[in-house]
Length: 101
Image 1 (cartoon, one colour):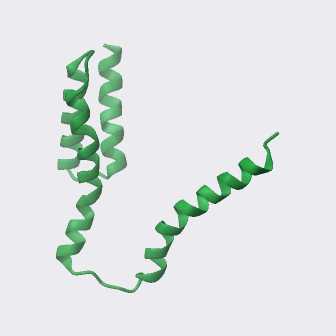
Image 2: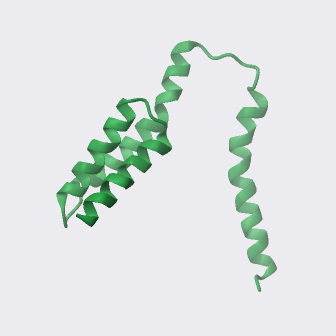
């Protein structure tokens, strides 16, 4: 049985992460951003993904090909215009297949 302190903590953490995501939608839902700013904001997830993946390539000690293949598959999927989730899943699938071989 879960203690009430833990349940309140989980509820509080959910609220703290929900508010910053909900506020921009509630406040700026009628604001039209300039096309340049829209283009910049569309690329933020890919830049973040690159910042997370690229350093990891250089710190792999077991098999460098895991990093190289993961980067190439993510880059190709992103270059083709796939959603960020699809980019991550493409890398996972490619590395899972490489791990099986």
